[in-house]
Length: 157
Image (cartoon, rainbow, N blue to C red; front, side, top):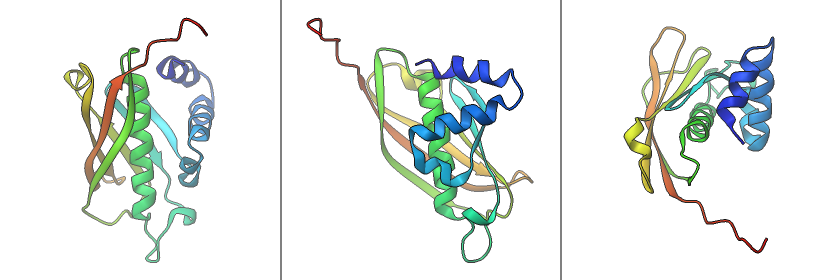
């Protein structure tokens, strides 16, 4: 499935990004807990909006750290699907996050890589950051991916 082509097509119609975001989140239903919207997708970059609403709040009324991490993981997954060469596959390996400030507004969860990161099998370090409406970074980190060759198709079916 060409995730980038589907996103581009959906983005051209009213409510298309919302519909695409819902369909993407249904692949990993836990993403639905943050009511995400994929607002930008291209090779090496994805941005997910994590809305500030009571369903993602912690005990002090800000966006819970795990909800922020969930948005960052969705951005990473969208980036990986839009970027990875067809002969490779990926699997999350680990996540390292620093909590820098209170998440007191709707957030943009951004994931980025460089073209050289996807040159072949190995580890890809996806840079992630979540920012508030005022541009303040609230979480920054790296999500590491294990990238391997796709197995050859079995010619016997």
